[in-house]
Length: 241
Image 1 (tube, rainbow, N blue to C red):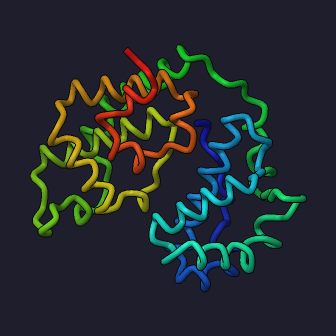
Image 2: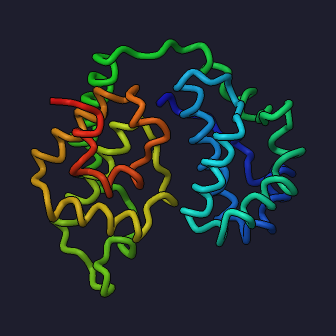
């Protein structure tokens, strides 16, 4: 996915301040904006009009907000969306909604052609090479508190490195950018379950298949959080030999 541009002064914007209190603080508001920007960029990559969400897209996004723990249930998420988001950050356009701020900042996303299958594979390989040359050696500079087992004990460095590599590889295959706030204990737990079952070679093989089949219907709306629980079946689901 082409990287979506955030407002440089996001936390100073009135629309951010208006959402901060209903969401329970600045950190949760930033997480909300990141999730929304990510979904809008993904929809654009799939050919949707820039910054626009259909009712089905909104429903899926509200489910994501519940999944990420920003709301306890869909009713609360929908109430927040209608009362706090629509009419401010998002504008109603018939049955759909648009985000003028996203459109203004990311006009270039609408101009880029969709990549070929080979293009997806090359982009994935380049990102992986960059990661292996740099980030693993230098570290992702993430808080060690999220790299723990279920009982709270710290993971050994070798396992932390494998978990990091898996998460970044999945993000690269799905063209997702992950800010530090996106690294959570829940995500690490899912990744640890995968690295306990598969070798690094097997993991890279699956991630490469996912990257090559980025345009497959199974990949629609796919995130690393959704991919990890089905890591052993995703290649079968996309019909790859």
